[in-house]
Length: 134
Length: 121
Image 1 (cartoon, helix red, strand yellow):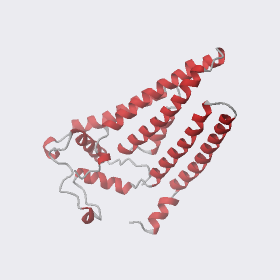
Image 2 (tube, each protein chain N blue to C red):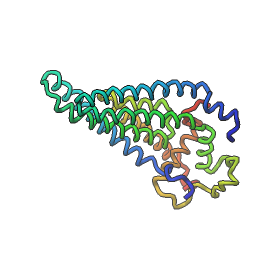
Image 3 (cartoon, one colour):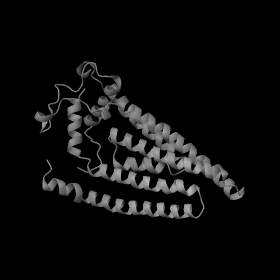
Image 4 (cartoon, rainbow over the protein chains, first blue to last red):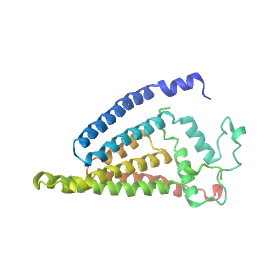
C-alpha cells in the first residue's frame, strides 16, 4: 500500500504542496500573533493572556486540518462506502481484517442506519466526497 | 458492530455544529453591534472585555465541531473552509448553518424516497 509513489503523491502532489504552502504561512502567522498578544499581556493588558493562549490553539487546529487533508485517501473512502453498502468488492487486505458478511445488521440502531443510508446515497450518486481530487 | 464507533452517527455531530453555530453567531453579533459601539462611542471596554475572550474560545469549540462534522459527513475541504469563515462574519454563521442543515436533510430525505426497504434493513 505505502509504496514510494503513493507516499510521494501524498506529500508532493500539487494539492499537497498547496496545503504545505498554506500551513507554512498559517502556523508562523499564529505564533507571531501569540507572541504579539503575549508582549501586550506582559505590558499590562490582562485580557491578552487569554488571546496569547488562543492563537497557538488556532495554529494546532490548522495542523490538524492540514494532516487530515493530506491523509484523506479517496480510494479508502470509496471502499468504505462499498463496504457500507455491502455490494462492492472487498478491500485488498480484507482477509486480514475479515469484515462480516453484512455491515448492515438487522438490529442496527437508527442512528447508524441513517448514517449508512447517507453513505449509500452519496455512493449511488457516484459523487464521492473527498478532500483530494481523484 | 464492526463499523468504527466514530462513524456510527452524524446526528450528534450535526447537532453540536448547529448549537455552536448559533452560539458563535450570537456572540459575534453582541460583540460587533453592542460591544464595539459601546467601546468607541461609550468609551467603555467592559462589554468587549467580557464577550471578546468568551467568544474567542467558543469559536475554537465551533471549529472543532465543524471539523468533526466535515469528517463524518465526508465534506470537501471547500465546505469546511466556508464553515470556518462563516464564524467570522456577522450573520453568515446562521446562513451557512441553515445551508448545511438543509443539504444534509435533502440527502437523507432523498434516501428515504428512493428506499428499497426490504433489501437492507
